[in-house]
Image (cartoon, rainbow, N blue to C red; front, side, top):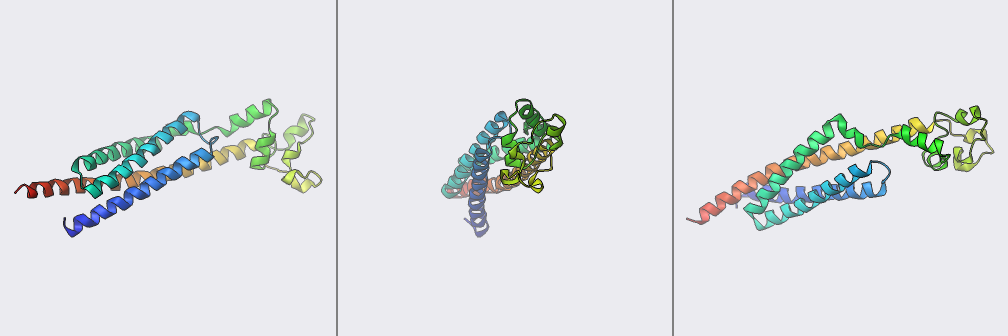
Length: 209
């Protein structure tokens, strides 16, 4: 194997390892943020990332073993996965998987279970603390910094609806960035895999003569 082919082989192994690490990190992130996206989308992400990890390690194995068949399989999978991710990430319909902060706050408001949201996201009421005042309800201590209601300055002034929606939109943006990074890795890994497949095939042909 020539110097260029060896360089590509090593680059392919390193790239596949980085891609696997990114996919594993994505799985861990989703696991620790179960309320961020819809359950159906989370399952899809788990499956996709698991497949990325599997084929990334398979790609490393194929490169080390110089297996043309395994490398071709990885190349085809990476191309298909990259195309699916590009369509899924670039279309607005993908945002349907993001939780709606407004609806979550409305449901919590109707069921009188705002405390957890208010404490976690440092907000108060649907639009502001005035929501409680209008209804002649006492402002809950979860609307205060460290639940210290003795100081008016500790009161959270921002409403939970807009804050929770902004939080989900920001997290979705971060998720999209990770997805595009994985797509870039997949396309580069695909090109390297195609190069190695051609190189392995040429090497096998030369060995026959």
